[in-house]
Length: 347
Image (tube, rainbow, N blue to C red; front, side, top):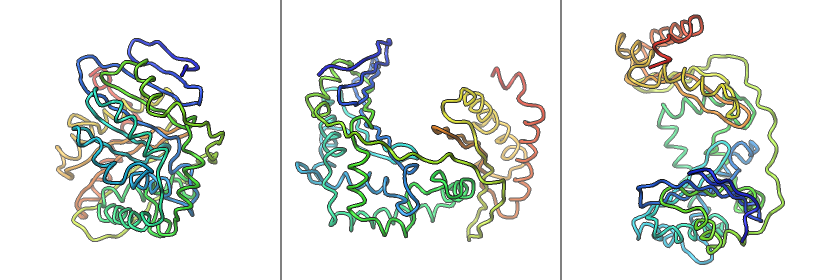
């Protein structure tokens, strides 16, 4: 198998195989382990409201069995050699990951290829796994410091997929069928839509050869494209209050930010660190240390392909929520008026 092209950077190397699969590797001297992952360019941003949560449900379902492995076989394959296997669904990609000793890289590659590209996606498995995902949704609903971010995204992005829940809703997940899962898998899970990466004690050429031996190079180019999303347009600034029983009020201030390709994201990350990224940050010192209004207060940023989000979270007692919110507004206004100090920038 011959790569179409490759980079020869000191540590990070890149190849594109004839079938369109992008391969990255980074050699890390001094370790005896390898982290191996496959990133599929398909996730909640590519869903319709009616199919909300289908990407996440598919991520669960690929672990339920392949033509050569049962769900238990998949679970035991790497754990029996001291490794691990996991996955997650984000806004713009779905990731499948393995961690093993370097001597077991070929096994990890073979297992990942099997579950990512050859899942059975049986209706009988879906009946059970749907219950698992519904319980995951219940967990978020019972975790207000997670739920507040779901509500904030929905409020900020409205009907755009950036405002959708990655997990889906109880209604949308309950309506998904095994055909929906197969349709998504057939459309999106093709080598030209996947980036496979290894880091650790790995040689790039040997990694490419390992992928060839374990079936990645034989995957057929699907010739399909991901759905094109409409341009995200944030909703006008607004306030939303959702009454719930609990010991705390959870507050998120947030708004749109620059996309990942915008070099201003580095400045935003620096500002975020100074404002709420640690114990020395302005928000920690003001809200927690000076006023004693919260245990948890921090800033956050997320950068996506065509937009981003940033903001501040605080959890505080209901009777002090207004005072905490006002103090955060004062700090944000001070930042907007006078920016960071020279000491904050150079520290």
